[in-house]
Length: 473
Image 1 (tube, rainbow, N blue to C red):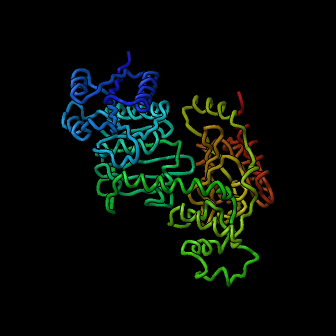
Image 2 (cartoon, rainbow, N blue to C red):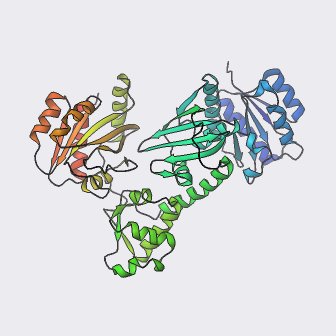
Image 3 (tube, rainbow, N blue to C red):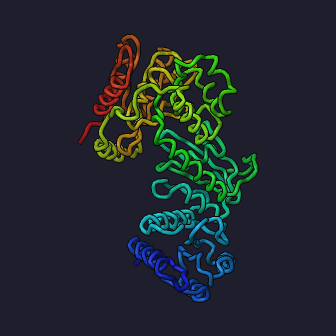
């Protein structure tokens, strides 16, 4: 018998609202919840006192119901401190009484299956949190970040939330449920918050008390932050439909006189910033990373400048990216890694010992590969050293790590080769000694690209090395 219980408090409803809650009750039942319904607050409190509940859903549109009073009664009862309170409302969710005490608000019309999945994730997360005094772990695929943050806000939690997704790492410090500091790679603040909310997959760890003394800024209530982030996400989504892919390189128009482009007065503030950043060509992703301006605002300026012909896109069309391995191979790769107790794979990419530029040949070749997520910042040290990004094969992350083709760095090769599955050498001249070292002494399958590297040759090398390292079953 299921140990999960959902109580729905809905005063006598008219037909549309009744159908809404009927469908949600049925969807919860299909996911293993025992669902009970009450039509007034006193009866609901009696039911909770008798059997408790994991989640209470309140029809916040019911005029006869004192939502604030009912919620305060629940919160003042120690036995119900871990109970999740969820609202069902029409219109602006920020106007719902006792909004801060609710883990989630569904706006009508409610999509019952999606709502049931989200509630299932919230209840599971709350149960995991109850078994650990220090940490809460999970995956954004099962519990979206917005839901997780609302759960933590309703609990008045203080601590640090760390997020690790393909190509992106971020952190959110919370103080009594309010946002204090937010980072995502090189970005911070609202820009970082919007980027983190776009992640559909990724591991998270919330450590209670882990942010003590860290936050330097004024706390920001989660509700207004989510409202503003949602507005920006809608704008980003609208603009993305007409803009090139993130891997496409942008540059100043060759037909526009430099004096006109350098005249900042001819552009809006953000437009002038974009033109200035494109003194050297950058990918669209690199342009967004190089500025603290919100992505929605930058993309709006890029869209306007492209339409005016002030800047141009190069590097190919949004379609036609090269596939390294079909997604079906990911299942075989996942099985082999699981047997070894691992989550993902790593490929060492050996390159000439010169700085890696964001618009350089290695970055451009990887940008044309399907399902490649570039790292937040390309390695820029005096030697090529650092994470280039993550190649997703199905749902399996394959990290690409750059190392310099330099004999002085061979001790470092040995250290990193111990955790690698394969290697690719991409150099201007043959590197037989390096190939022998990687294959014979370190036991790695090696594929080599000599001369000019491009998307086709890089994809072929990655495919060859991976299939030899982790062959299909």
